[in-house]
Length: 448
Image 1 (tube, rainbow, N blue to C red):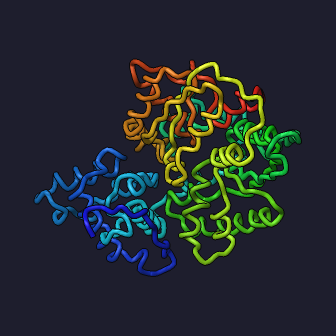
Image 2 (image 1 turned 45 degrees about the horizontal axis):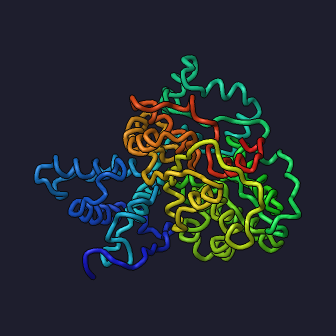
């Protein structure tokens, strides 16, 4: 096989239950094999922090090659990967079916599974990603929780930094007592072309606890278009645990959620995920982790991202009338986990359904990386990785800044604060996701 491949990339099952998967010697052999290929290529030097760390490590070694690099020094490379999949999806010429069989993100995942198995993930870090538990606790006292997590709160942010390792300047999501699950469903427009559709919304932990207004916007837009939308959020998809290497927990969640959502399929509902990270888990990661689970397989073939679903309505039945032009241009960040779904830029296609919409798209990583980007050991690096995206957003001059990943959107705004020519979020309307702009164009106020 030649240099690179024109064939579509494929992925192997994640054989996490096999003893070889976490065998220290076999893992080290594979890390060295892949790192040596990456060293000889270096096409990914500007994607994330892992690759510069790898190349500097090799360049500063005695021989300038991997043979004089100690395996114990690999940890920063493993820790730097955010599992965004951009190297696999957009850059690497050696992904399967190439004979080199290189899947960098899943190799980093394998190393993290080993680290988790060895007890290297501390109790505090494990608790930080218990999104359902944290959302329920903070939602019981949202005003207090949001005050404590607010940037600039000298009374609490220093403690969060010392105890939990969260950078004192990192923007943290807000919590709501009135979660998405508690909101009343909107009235369905029976005159819409798509009337008769039913959608079960996997709201995700983020939308349910941290951004219910985004879920309200999605439900309202679907209702305007004749779709009966119901909340189908049961529990977190496990993406935060995947980032830490707790793959057994991910498998448990996948089985429970898939069984529940397949029942919705049997009742005639379409399955729609509101955050791309969760859609990616259902479409691609879960089937590789639990390849023999029939529910997981069926769900993977059925689930759609919210922007993908709205575009499907527009192309199949047509949207309900009533969209008005926006009062400003849009800077749209193409989130990494939306790109990794291999469905195309659906958010851009959806926003262009708005009359006279001016949409400029940012195809660079925000640098946030889930919980990775808020940690004090990573925050400055996360801003550096996201600087090109922040610069593009700032230079666009757009009134609205949105991303399919709301956390990425806030991180871009933080990056803009660091740029002399940019502004933070003070002058940017508080709409995070493209679906909120579609609701705004329909004149739906509670979706803002």
